[in-house]
Length: 352
Image (cartoon, rainbow, N blue to C red; front, side, top):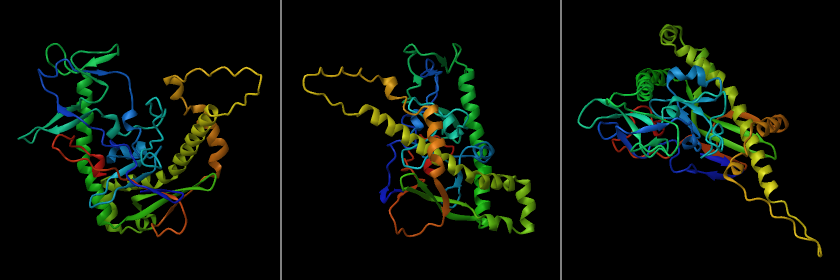
């Protein structure tokens, strides 16, 4: 749940949230022999994703860029926090591009592919969301550069093989990721926390619905447990999680910069023009093009805003408590989609 200056926002994410899949189908021949995948990378589908689940092998890379927290529930999952408000991903721009140099979680990177259990069997098969606009059916390319998923002989192409390998790697990671989550619970290391942001203009945002490792309890872990935790790599993963908390400031800076850029763009398009009697009316401004409307969040604007305003942002982690003053408040939850049996079986956002 997000609270922003006293106004509570729940379920404010777009309908898809981080549940990207709409029309999942198992790849089969001959039905899909002509399917192609557009080469262009477009993460617009994740522009409303406030958080993404991670597998244990991703924590090292993700901890360099995002705050990593843990979901609630019996089996906590590592989560990369991507925004401060429902429906906000601060790392996807208006053109659908991921912010340069930042790690893209595999949960997002593998889309539109996933693994689906074949009905009546225990077999997992490669599936694709044919509603994704990068999936081109019936050999139609619409002038886009694209790759086939099957060659003329019906064999999987390198594009399809790479997608399968990524999905299989994520599937293999589920068991050690779940084991780590259960170990955190058994060691009683997780505590509920809230991230509080004090932004310029006395603007306040609070983000909760997650847990973190209690640093003191982690340091006081009994010696008898250290050997197992070291062998499983859990000590290193936990340390990376704790270090990643410094990345809350990255979210604050990007949030401030995006808000400042949007405000500047709005002011530039709404400046009143006074026309005096007897003077010709000013010429009409050219109509805004699609490209113009999508270039609000430029790197130049982000860096300038970060330099001038981010110092005024304060970030802290506190215990969840009753509120006595207005603020914005968010939880790291998206509405769960129904499990219709045709949803990729690796980690889903509604399980995070």
